[in-house]
Image (tube, rainbow, N blue to C red; front, side, top):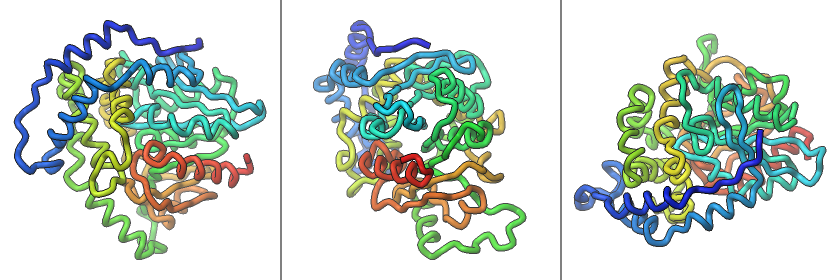
Length: 376
């Protein structure tokens, strides 16, 4: 393990500028908006900002204010932000991102949370400066084992884990396979479904739960094509994303629009262009669009895809924050059959990228969960 600072060669930024200058967008269908995928008018505006106003060096300086490490964990390179608490006896907290996110999602919560915890934010193997991966079989179980190895190398025998999207699945896997080390398990995307032995699957499910399930189903409808592609043939479409910054941005931008809790469908009601571009830069500068997408394929082939955690039971104390714009809305009655719930909160706003969208609510919730665990 060694200290790490981000220092992107100027030649890489020059190459990006040249590619942005040569962008060729298709003609926009009048009035299409986001109905067919990425809104090309919005995409054009963000591309213009990227080329003429976005300042990577300022972002890089901000990132390097947070201590970072680079290590080999479970055979893979792992990069992580590591903000220590002033109190050496404070608990350790791992924050785990998913796709198409990155450690950038957590930049606004690392400082506040490090007032009470040692905060570790890994880039998952295959993502950002932890990638690309160069071997077969790096599935969600391998990622979880890599995170556990990272925490050992950092000197944390026990820790609290939090995740959303793939991070939620990795967090659950840690709570299963490394339960003796995980003090608490928190999720913004809690996987639980009625099992075959449940006499009445809808027992305890409220009208409010049903309404949330229906709204979530409507949000998901027609929006899972990306998963079919990335879980079966990730090496096809990602060639274009690796070669074209516009192609990469269009693929990712659409998901932030579809999965975030926006006001009147306006991306800028929640994010700034710089925030979304910094997240995309973690894929572009590291050449990890393909290896990140490959996590879907490797996990599906190994039987560890997102459907895997629906059954079985986790014995680690669990907390869940229900964000209204999240794609997965799990009724508490179902969750309590699969987890020992010690903390449950329904948030007033926020979507799939909870820490990114609502950092204050996210921080407050994590502190409350730590309190429920007796750690603050």
